[in-house]
Image (cartoon, rainbow, N blue to C red; front, side, top):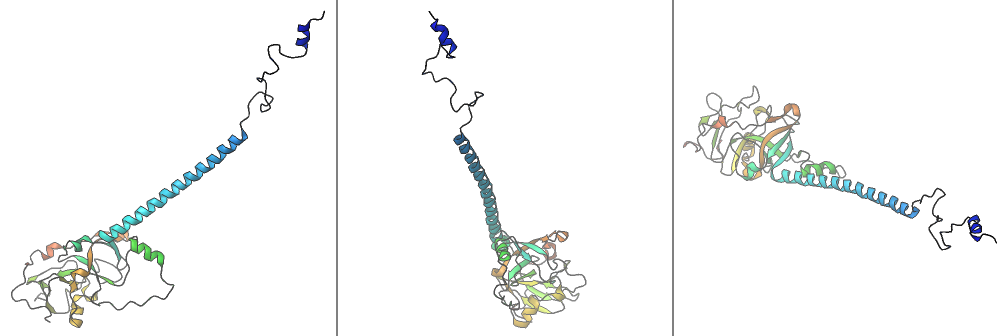
Length: 286
């Protein structure tokens, strides 16, 4: 009688497994027995990587935009409340300030009422000292420069501002000149080391008392400066309102070869008495 056990062994079946046993290789397995990755899972992984990369790039871009926005806001606030840049277009303040210098102006000096004799101040032309600025033709405005000036990243090159040195404040009697050619303030002669080399303190005689709330200003290059002297003689509008003062110039920022901290030379006016002399003439005297 044939051995049934041997016959089952000859057909290649494992006697330990039943027909329902699913532990054998599946169609998803390759011939080596390794399980390949799910193609859909791979696609999801690739898509997720791309999306993650996009989010990463946008994150960097967003940070850059945020930094630029903060810088512009800070620049605008500094320019509005603390410091403002200006451009020097003329030689009326040489050698202290030269043509094309860029200066920073301390705005708090005007706000706190600390404008004193010797200070270099920038002020708006509310007196009509400057000729009218010709209107720009349409389409010639450089909006980028206008914007950068507005936020304080470029100096203000407006022709409606002037820069001069304060010689007299409210109540002062300022006279040119004594027997030695020096300007006197409240009867006290002043030596002015900031004057342009070779320039006289003034070749134009004057005798004025500065009204309260106003200042008397002159350029350091006296024979090249249309300042309080000329406008007082021509129109009686030589006094500058303190309200028109933007602030005190404190730094020459550009060019770097001319970088300097601007001084107000307080020692020049140390001996000037606070009260005008009794012989002072009223404002508007010749």
